[in-house]
Amino acid sequence: MPSSAASDYIGRFAPSPTGPLHAGSLVAALASWLDAQAHGGQWLVRIEDVDTPRCVPGATELILQQLAQCGLHSDGPVLRQSERSGHYQAALNALIAQGLAYPCGCSRKDIEATQSQQPARHTAAVYPGTCRPSPYGPGLQGKATRAWRLNIQTVREQKGLPAMTEWHDAQLGQQQQNVAQEVGDFVLLRADGLWAYQLAVVVDDALQGITHVVRGADLCDNTARQMLLQQALGLPTPQYRHTPLVLAADGEKLSKQNGAQALDLSHPLSALNAAAAHLGLSAQSGTVQQALANWTAQWSTH
Image 1: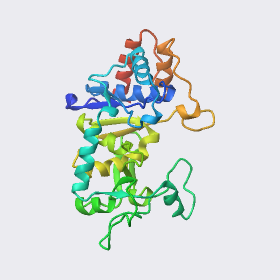
Image 2: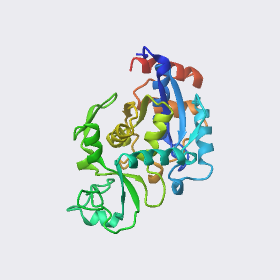
Image 3: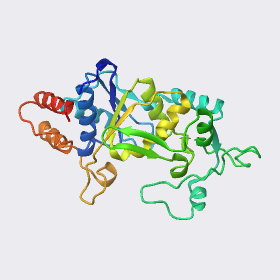
């Protein structure tokens, strides 16, 4: 049902310009757009190009062109993370000033050497807190600073938070994660000098006034970390909805990394119908605008 405070809804679609949109990207874009439309809200596009080595020249312009072909237009200026380093630095400075972030001198090899078993596929090793400051001396122990991490233990103590971070996902239901045990103190500023995804996303969601985040289920695991950062920085927590993933033939998430093909938009409605079907919506004919209007009505009762 539409929100009683419809104008307060601000959603976003935040692709990384590592290549053109593929079928999975369009599902996420359509779901976030429909949720904003169904609530009478705004839908913003943010280009998450903070990981510059992975970005492909011209991909941003291509993505925006693909969205336009599908009738999906941002309701405000398109924000680019690569232009926002000052905002991320200010957030890190605030965390450092509160004693909530600390320098880390560990390499990935150092961290992996502390693990009793190999991490699961597609997951990073849990950071054991090697460089976390303690009352007994400096955490770096003479090592040079490589990265900056969030001190989860101190965040919990200062903010009075439980060990388990819990939230209700509009698609997946009740969720929880013990970030300290399952992830460890996570990186805010990377060893290569680039801003970590978690910090950039939290800062931008807050500064853009994002109230609802609709994205693929592969990003659900990031939610607890982002909630901890929001609480550490005194920022509001949006409502989250994680939509089903489009899978490749091998059962893995369809992605640019595993060879997902760029969207064929010679017939935009065909691509949109495929995305809508994945979201449990009925096939439409007519124009793209008519289809989007009909799907918006369906989404409102979805």
